[in-house]
Length: 288
Length: 289
Image 1: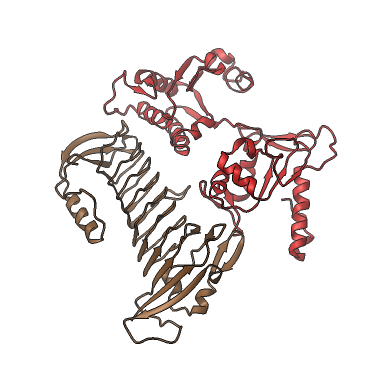
Image 2: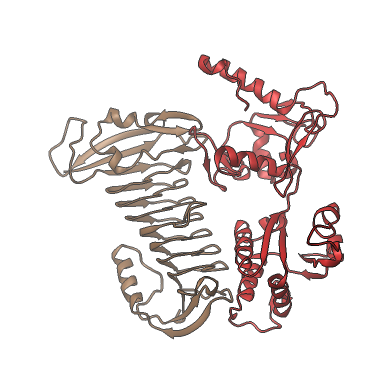
């Protein structure tokens, strides 16, 4: 038996709402009344979920359940949010398991500090998508804002695991200070992707802004479009990295098709940033 | 000019008894200015290249080779040879100070430019003593940063909506919150958003209830819903002023003004809010706002 909890936005709020309480684990095993009483923050006031959402619990694949109380199961309920949620911050923050689907755009910090599970965003995501993410997968059908998978200010390590897949474009500072994990951008990317990156992989399919990989220590940035690098990146060689084919296959399995991507692409390898030890690499596609 | 004569270029001290003669002044700017005319070396750069300049200087002071650049290659509109000369000057001085202005924070890269300058200065300290000082635009901007830091740990863009301080420029900074229309009322103290903020932010501010505490008439007081005249700090009210090199200075009250100071107005607003909220427990307290 599969349970689906649908939250429909009644009306877009005039000021932002912080909704870190909405994630699959938190909704698991709760009755409709309990869900309606979950706290949300708007301005300096603590409000309830019922002020903003209509909740519907549907169960499929088994006998129709009349009781509104959900059984605690190993499988977490699928949470579906519908409406323009661009005023809702921190959706899916810290989620560790389950599936959450947002049919609309989301506000800041969606999937921040996420540890597991799947977060699907059918619209656009705002800044700090998957910031400090530790595991799981985020899939964005639209575009994302700045600081995807980045570290909050004052922190030295951002995203430390998991996968962020963005079909559209991403803003500036994508993967800034990331420690581990994968960020793939299907469209263009703003300035300074991989700033002070410690490790991990960033793949940018479209045009990339200036200063790619500035101050990166380790890690890999794959650029499918040519760009001008800082003079602290040194050309090494042109080769066909083995991991590229594996990466393309894995992305395909996850439903993320790269336009015009071929497993046999050859890349120019640049090592840098020399200012920070030069152990990072930027791969620029030569075949494209 | 006052800065040059009293604090930076011409001032005499224990280890710089010759004043201006014993110092080297390098000005990096996008156009010639009165300051650049007095400089030993003036590097006129193209706008928007601040990050690249600081990045290349970092390489040069550490003698790291630069890919694809020759001595005549231009970095920010200035040949590499001149940047090399500057890097040598910086490494060989006894005590250097980088004074950077607001322009650095407004060109492409914004806060990253400042971060790169700070990293450059940090690395220069392997060779000699070096400092970076932010040049402030208005009086006592540093004061608000100082107080916010010792009270909350963060210098700006602090949000208290959840009852504890949170910091995130871009999310909680004034211009961003106003342009995204995320606030429904504004209390403005000792500044003139009508003159300084972008047009979209000002338009939104005009559409919400706005209270201004201001001693003078300005571009905000014309349209603000409530204007509370206050005594000007340092003239009609005493207080502490933080100079941009973080030195605190006590300002005395010079003359009596018929209106209250910012602090007194905020105190009475706070007391009234507590009274309205019926919070009897806090009502008797007189904590400064």
